[in-house]
Image (cartoon, rainbow, N blue to C red):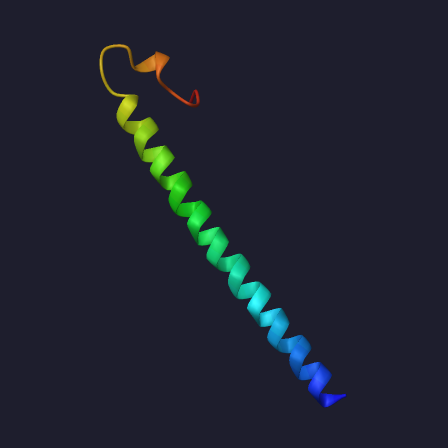
Length: 54
């Protein structure tokens, strides 16, 4: 029973680590998109290139 509990704990930590790793990758990708949108939003016709309207 103790071995099964230890294996469940290992799988839980492995899953959490994998999910956190994927969340970091998603955060970096979204940050790059935000920077690109911010850079394209500059210039004479800034309103036509925005992803969002604030």
